[in-house]
Image (cartoon, rainbow, N blue to C red; front, side, top):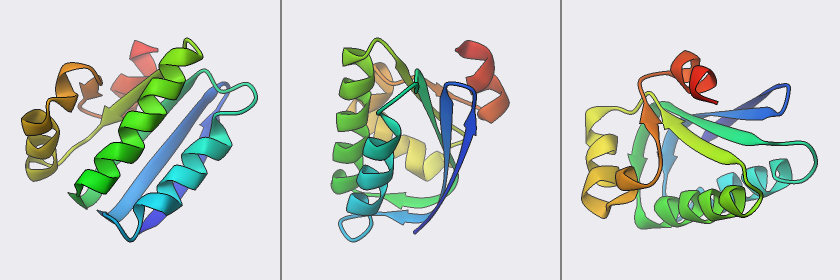
Length: 110
């Protein structure tokens, strides 16, 4: 999986490309944890090029969500393909993690 990271003021945006599974989840976890220190108030994860997410990927996103809530920040997911969105819906994650159509909308909701 390729992770492209950008920063806009106190927001980190992660663009995910490929599969988020047991082989790549630790890579994302390390990058997210690295961004949680300092002035980060919100995280946006762009899923437009995410092909697959496993339970290991869900665990990493849940952990980051809880850490952002603890710091009174926000994590927002955006631009999901239907088959990836279905995983978040079935797992119940979409009930407590905001999912919006795109990065622009995510930035507007912060």
